[in-house]
Length: 226
Image (tube, rainbow, N blue to C red; front, side):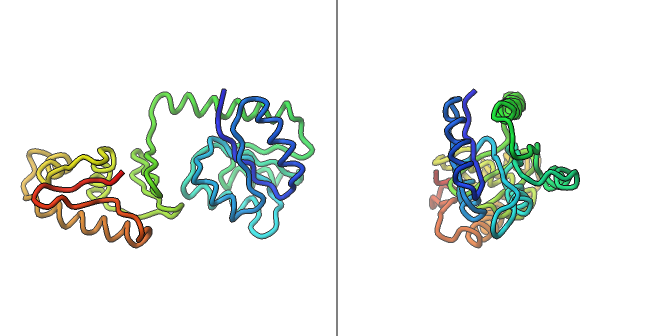
């Protein structure tokens, strides 16, 4: 089973040890030695994260909370902290598993495999996330994240954004957008689409001012820039 694994640990020898062992199993391995680098590497969309607890600066528990603002992949804590309260805290802040150091490499590989197999079964049934430029659009939860920060959209705004984003580079008229979002039987007019697009652009621009997501095709409609 292939997958991309992010290792976050400030002990370089341990990172190298795990990296070599997991690459031998066919995994793609990326790594970070601190929380800031780890948050940047989330853009590479790991399938599973191995996370140390005791690191300088932001510890693993706090980092896990940050990660869970935008990422739902399995997180396995690997830590020398063995108290029951630490294991419970790791699970409560969003971790999926907790392994104590020193650990069995065979056990780590088995748990990684089990978590990835579970994720594969879930995603085989339905896949809910769109990753576009700096955005993550969760179509099931009606949530949008930009650079790991959540953007609040109304239901109508989200449905317009999702409709456009799922059809990149396709020009959609205001009539098409209105009919799709409000329904053919809705009592209103397409001017409301224009107002909603303005609000969507303003919210996207506030979080990502240097990226154009929605373009106006004058006299025709709107287009999502891929």
